[in-house]
Amino acid sequence: MSVSFGTSGLRGPAIDFTGSTTAAYVRAFLDVICSGIPSRTVYLSADLRASSPEIAGHAAAAIVAAGWTPVYAGNVPTPALAAYALARQSPAVMVTGSHIPEDYNGIKFYRPDGEFLKEDEAPVRERAETLLAEGLSISNGDLPPVDPAVAEAYIARYTDAFVGRPLNGLRIGLDLHSAVGRDLTARILEGLGAQVFPFRRSDRFIAVDTEALDPADLSRAKEQISAHHLDAVVSTDGDGDRPLVIDEAGRQVNGDVLGILTARRLGAKTVVTPISSTSAIEMTGWFETVVRTRIGSPYVVAGMAAATTVPVVGFEANGGFLTESDIALSGGSLQRLPTRDAILPMVAALVASAEAKRPLSALVADLPPRVMKADRLKKIAPADGAKLIAALDGSREARVALDPRLAAPVAVDRTDGLRLVLSGGDIVHFRQSGNAPELRCYVETDSAEATDALLADMLAALNRHFAA
Image (tube, rainbow, N blue to C red; front, side, top):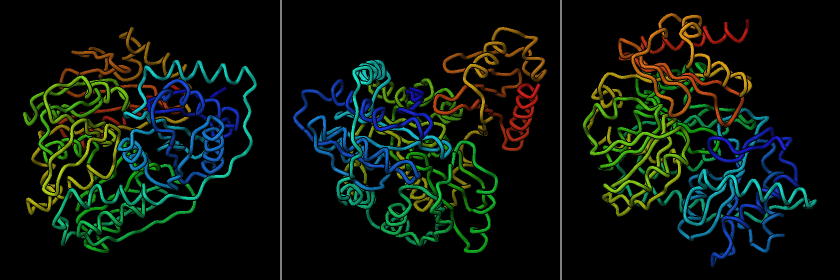
């Protein structure tokens, strides 16, 4: 098997999610994680990749063969599926490759009590391998009829919590592309009072990485802002758990900045976030406790579960926002959802802007001047990326060879990859992706221009290294 657990869920080339492999992992998840629970219902959904319906069909057949009943939500965002299943203390299976290239895919599992944890991976993998060794096979399955209740509950989650049409008067562009929740996003924004201007609906899957946005996507958004006098442009990644927000000036609001604005709007006291998020979080002084973790939502979930000062929230540098506590809002309580969600940070930032009667760019300008940005080199084998990171960690000569500015960092963090704090306070962080054959580079400085320049230099140096 070439599928494996990555940063978030099971990932691999789409062609390797065969009927037997899919069935083995779904059956293993139910056998190991879900045995003994009262519910015998499994909620199932899939993103809009070409390979997803077939994989979802295999998953449905495996669920039936294991003695459970699949309820198919159709094509809905991952957090919509997770929230609905969690409220019913039932497991869920989401077929999605998230933001990675179309020829890859994946499966995200959700426990009856929340997100699938890192410690769940080994026993599920071992059980799946045993089932395959025993010759487990599965016939092609038909997906059940779509149950629209999951989608409707997700819309109501936000339109009920944020009452009074708080986005009334805002003009919001919506980049539809192939995001699985594109139509639900439009309905939520319109339900909150915004005038929505949708564009770029695609029948072909487009991999949108909110941490490494294609410059063409930003240019397209700027054109829409100019043409329609928009207050913002929003979107999500493929499965709807990473937000994309572009302000009225055509600048992307980084995911961790969205996280800060959202946490403040929700009145959070504890923030849990990976080491890659901007250091502006601590510098604001807005939160009683900030906990840093490895990159990946399971680590954030574990950190939130251990926190004691409520309300507890978490977010990642990609903007995905998690809530460990129920959040009291004007319309009632927003129920906890300890998995990444794109709609909450999108809506909360827009609501904060509308309430303050200030543009998004002004809210961002209130933050300490620290700007983090990430990009990646594609098709870098994990072994090659790990070899370079080990060399940079252990050798001044290797760091100088890559870029002389890396020669003598004043601090080194190995929580996840290699994070170097340079003498002037700039940060360069190298990390091999856990989801795809990509080497990621995160850069933080005190200005957007300096961050862009340093990131471009690092990517050029990495390209030279791997081309040599």
